[in-house]
Image 1 (cartoon, rainbow, N blue to C red):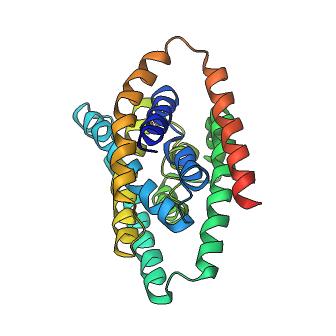
Image 2: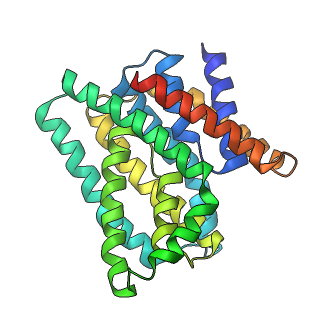
Length: 255
């Protein structure tokens, strides 16, 4: 099983390297289906996996000044309190069967939403430009904080959303942002959010630390190799495979 975990970590890392998304979206269903983890433990373990794998990318974008600090602060103002409140509610109520059902449903919905965001990534920019007519600049800060709240709850409940969904929300509200700053800001926001939510799940005993380390052993070289392959494989082919996997996983989790 250790070899399988390394292999899965490598495969998911390669997909992240090729597409920039899909780590948490694919890892949590694999933890459920392959390793048989309870939903809460799969989500908690994946939060740590996502946060730790994105730290190096966040540092690199920070050094290259690819981060919009205003947008980042506004997102964190919403997401961190929302994540803490969600974890606090789980502590107060206990991890009941109702919570397990809610976590599973949130995971399935998040997978399907992620599939849509990945499939229609190019269209969101046009939608964002049209939204500017009804969304004046002075209101964007409040809407960005509100988006952070949504991401904080979604990530805490499902471990999914900080990547593809987060980038889509930024693009909708700030369509004129440069691509490199969009990616950098999204990654910089994902790291503290996933780690805060991950710490919260760890206090509830929702992390399989041994499996986490084994997955990371495979994912680190996988991300590097995936980044090299992205130059050779057609973008539509890679994203088509990712979307199909996300939809299949989402449907299976819900039903």
